[in-house]
Length: 193
Image 1 (cartoon, rainbow, N blue to C red):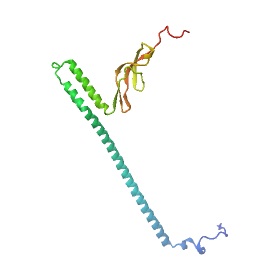
Image 2 (cartoon, rainbow, N blue to C red):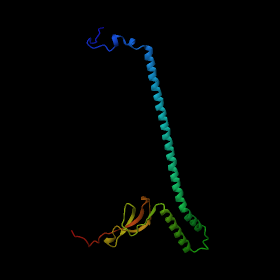
Image 3 (cartoon, rainbow, N blue to C red):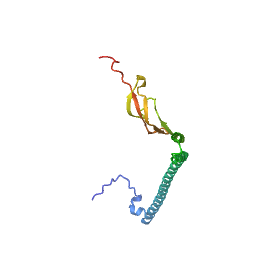
Image 4 (cartoon, helix red, strand yellow):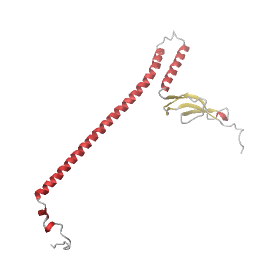
């Protein structure tokens, strides 16, 4: 086999010596072992940092879940405390002797309990949607039927509310179910063809 090195290129080895003789074998192994030891310690350090970071993240995630559950329970506790009085009043009405109480008194008492309950829930962000006589709004109303309007001015007004709706802190929980008035011009009115 022929030597294909360019004779004009200087030899990188000092004094043209072989590489095996330039660095003693023992010294090369010691340097490699030192480098390997340094890399092992860096790897162990990075692994320790990673494990600590993973443990911190896991603890953060668990703490966040606990705090969120605690906040939900606190909110439910406040809501339930607000409806305890109306619930007590309702219990008193449920256990009255019908022969001793007039119907009108029971109805009046039930209305008072309803007002008390709605007031308490309103304090927590609940709004009642009762749109009788207002313009129909499909964002918060659900039309279950229509009825004829007496005039064009009554077109698309809510005639009757079958079931009230509820909004909680700006979020629609249930639309009001309503009957909507619709105007249709009498047959004689309008342009003839």
